[in-house]
Amino acid sequence: MNWIYEPWPWYLAGPMIAFIMFLLIMVDKNFGMSLNLRTMCTICGAGNKTDFFKFDWKSQKWNLVVVLGTVIGGFIGSYFLSSNTAVAISADTILELKSLGFESAGTAYLPTELFDTEALLSIKNILLLIIGGLLVGFGARYAGGCTSGHAISGLSNIQLPSLIAVIGFFIGGLTMIHFIFPLLF
Image (cartoon, one colour):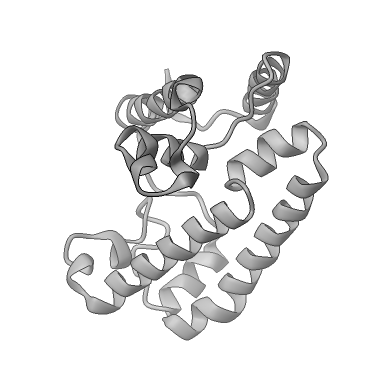
């Protein structure tokens, strides 16, 4: 059963995503993971401090189930349906990453130079993760949603703001990887 351990081809995974999006459109729901952070903060009482968190979080219970399903699905996929956790990247990319000091390129899912336990003891890595997390969080809030919400849900609803946000995500990603990333490493 070697097929179990291979990534699903686009012609299976793509229509499955499209089917889920069709169902969400039919029930007037929008997909996106960053909205769940607001919901969880509201559940924890953030509405007592900031008006932004004062909303009916119970209307978002369905989206919390999506998060739970994502976590469970990721666990099942990683531990039971995967024989190799390394990301398949080109040989040229591996060489370029290794020239920047990422020796784990092509052999690990995440670069151990940034996410290994020992790497978390580095002030530089901690600062990069904190600043990166703050920028991603701010960007998701400022754009009115995260990459999955805009790129999957927003574009499937033919929303112009989502198209603009997705173009911005790509420009930001390309700028980061080609100009800023080499300066950091």
